[in-house]
Image 1 (cartoon, rainbow, N blue to C red):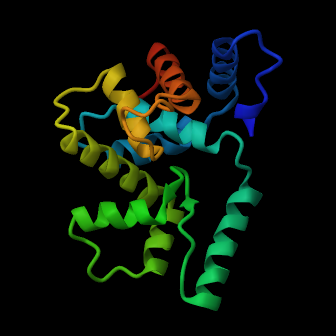
Image 2: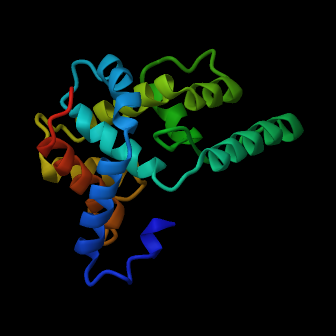
Image 3: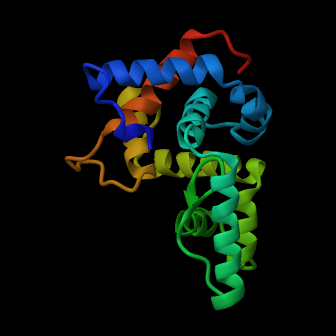
Amino acid sequence: MYFNNYSYYRTEQEFINNLSKSIIDSNNSFNQYNKIIKKTNKNSLVPNKFILSVILVENRERPIIWQKSEEILAKSSFILTKKIPDMSFGVGQIKLSTAKSVLTKEKKINSQTDISILNKLLSEEENIKMMSNYFKQIMNEQKFSYFDREKGLKILCIYHGYEINSLSCPGFYEKLVWNIYTILNEKELDF
């Protein structure tokens, strides 16, 4: 993974800056996700560019073959065992258990099977919608009334499965997402 290979750079921050710029400069993914994020992230305190930053980091080193392999593994597991592994899926890399939690809090899980939840996670639009809803839920649970760097990093810690006050958080991932978010805010994009 790209997180392991920053020894070439003098500092972790130099690595983050370099990777952030290369993601933004060489990756036009924001065009692909722009409409979906606008459509699914209505009435949220979490900025659209923050959601895009998470998507860009989650997909930077995940080629389509890797994503398809995860999908095949999950569906094969379901066929063989009637269970889907609690892995992360889709553009937002949302774990199956997280998706269940989000749907439960939205009171939408009654008729949802694991395979239907998996199919939602594999749909770009549904996955981004789930990310947006999860971020809203975190904001509500933490009683955040506005979005700033501190709250953004806390959201990322929870999203990544850390306790907010953990020594591991904010870590490299959180700093990378925030750095990309900062760069996106400096660019004039249609959000």
